[in-house]
Image (cartoon, rainbow, N blue to C red; front, side, top):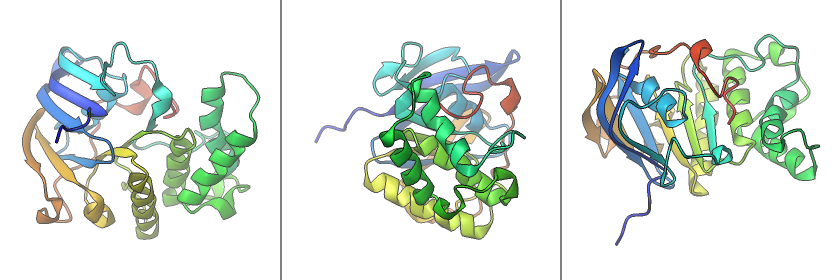
Length: 254
């Protein structure tokens, strides 16, 4: 049986930051409905691989395609939701939970007024992350784990076919980790593909179809049965590129 076209395909991809090689010939594919985890030590290239996939880091060698289209020609960004690492939901701007999540839809509407479908998408996203009852609350009143869930809801509000998440469990309480696990289970049941950079597998372990371990910018190994991995894998938050240096997707919304 022929395999479907990958939603992400990196073939021999290399990338540099500040003239320093970070990715060295990385091969990675994510297919529809798959949950793939990127693991590895600090500086191994995990975050750079994800940022390259969303156009934040230029590829210096190899091929990178999204939904079968080379990333340099890809324009249909509404198919992709991106949740960056170490960010805050409102960036210090007073806003309610609903307003932050709605900003994901605003990015799609291009100054056109929001309608019933937009409000329904926001309601669904808030429900998926368990924050429907906090929609009118200021984001400043939320815990760190709830902030992360707002960012995830903002990415989900666009109805993505592919979700990329960079360290979604970092600094998140166990209750929010379990909510995230349930959210991803619901999304993958609908055919959404997910690529995660993780410090530890935690409650997400049963959902992960494949784990790719990076070391020094190369694929060290691929684990088809992540249950064989220990729950905590040496994978410290990668900061190959500070979020403030990203040339695009500044708010984490495509």
